[in-house]
Amino acid sequence: MRYPVEPFRVKVVEPIDLPTKEERERLLVEARYNLFKIPSEKVFIDFLTDSGTGALSQSQWAAMMEADESYAGPRSWFHLKRSIEEFTGYEDPIPVHQGRAAEKLLASLYLHEGAGVVSNTLFDTTRGNFTAVGAKIYDAPTPEAQDLSSDHPFKGNVDLNRLEDLLKRGGIKLVVMVMTNNTGGGQPVDLDNLKEAYGITRKYGVPLIIDACRISENSYLVKKRNPKYSNWSVKDIVLESFKHSDGAFMSGKKDGLSNMGGFLVLRDPQKRLRAKELLILWEGFIHYGGLSGRDMESLAVGLMESLDERYLEYRTGQVAYLTERIRETGWDVMWPPGGHAVYVEVRNALSHIPREQFPAHSLVVELYRRGGIRTVEVGSLMFKDAARYEFVRFAIPRRMYLQSHLDYTVEVLEDIYRDRDKLRGYRITYEPPFLRHFLAELEPIA
Ligand code: F0G
Image (tube, rainbow, N blue to C red):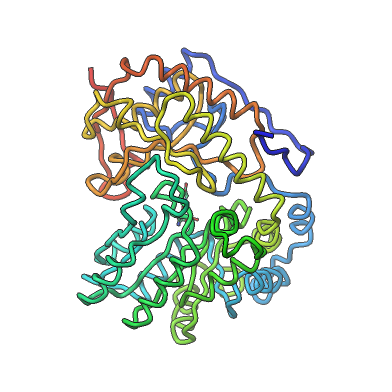
C-alpha cells in the first residue's frame, strides 16, 4: 500500500473550513504577508508546525483527568519523572514548559560571550538563545546534505572532520546534536555518527548535548536505514542514543506527543543543581517547571506512545507519501523523506526570484492564496545569510490529518507549479532584531 493505514480511528472531530478566495486575499494583506499572523480558523490545512499541534490519545486524556495540580511533589510530576527516566536512561530530570526554556538554561550553564557551539545545524530558537548570550555558532552538516536528490540515508549527520577541526582550534564550549536535524531538512542522524561525534567530544573534554525533540522518529529511521540496528527495538535505539551524550533537552511538543512541555537531563550533578536554581527563578518549582499537572500527565504518556513502532511506521510512512507525491509534481524536495515534514526546495523552480526577495516565502504565500494551506519558510527570510537552502516546510502534525488532506495539498502544489513563472518576490517593510520571521512584515515586489 502506498499510504499507511492509520493505526487509530477518529473519536473527536474538529471542523475545518476554507475561506473564500477574496477573504484569503484580504487576510494576506492584513497579515502583511506573514502567515504567523493569520488566525488558524482561517487556515484550511495547517502545516505551519508539528509542534504542540498533534492529536492526543484516549490514554493521554484519561491520565489528564487524574492529574494532580499541587505545587510541590504532585503525583503527576512523579509520573512524568518515571517516564523521562525510562525514555532517556538519565536520572533526576528537570521539567520545562517547552524546548526553548531548556535552551535558555543551557546557555546560562555552559555559554558566555565568545563561547563556541558546534552542531549538525541548530534550530532557530536554540540559535537565538545561544547568540543572545554572545555565543558563536558553527553549523557543521555533512557535504552529502547539500545534495538534495541523492539517496544518502543520514543527511542529518554532523561532519566529523569539521567537528574535530573546530574542537582542536579551541574555544568550543558545547556540541549539540539535533535529532532529527530539523533545519537541515528534517533528516535523521545515524546512531553511529552520534557515537563517533561523542568519542571526539570526549577526547577534547567538551560536553555533547542532544536536542531530542524528534528522537523517536530519528530512532525509527535508524532502525530502517542502518542494517546494524534493524533487529533493535526503537526503545533500545533511543536509550543507546542517550548513552552517547552528556545531557539532552527535549521539547515535548514533538515526539512527546503533547501540546506543551519538555525537559532537560544532565549527567553532571553540579550543573543539574545550578539548572534547578535557575528553573525556580524562570520557570517554576522543580516539580512542574512551568507545566500544569495535566501537561505533565499528557507528556508522561505521550513519551511512551511515541515508541510504538506501529505508530512510527504510519508516521514516517505519511511523511514519505507526501514527499514522494510532491516530488512527482515537479517541485524539488529534500530526499530521502525525513521524520516529520516535507521540505520543498524552490531555488530551481523559482529561479527568477533572487534570494534577497525570498523565493520560498513567495511559495508560502501562494499556497495560502490558492489553497488555504499554511506552511513555513526555512530559508533566507528565517536565517538571512546563514541559510543553506530555500525551503518551504510542510510539517505534519502527529495523528491529525488523513490521506485526503495530503492529496488536496499535492493538487494545490501541482496547480502552482504550472503557474510558477507568475510568482513574485517580497521585500521586508518591518524587521524585528532577532528571529525576524515571526513578526516581520512584507510586501510583494511589483
Ligand atoms: N529544537 C528543535 C529541533 C525544534 O524543532 C524546536 C521547535 C525546538 C528546539 C524548540 O522547542 O518550540 O518547544 O521551544 N520547533 C518547532 C518547529 C517550533 O516548528 O519546528 P519549543
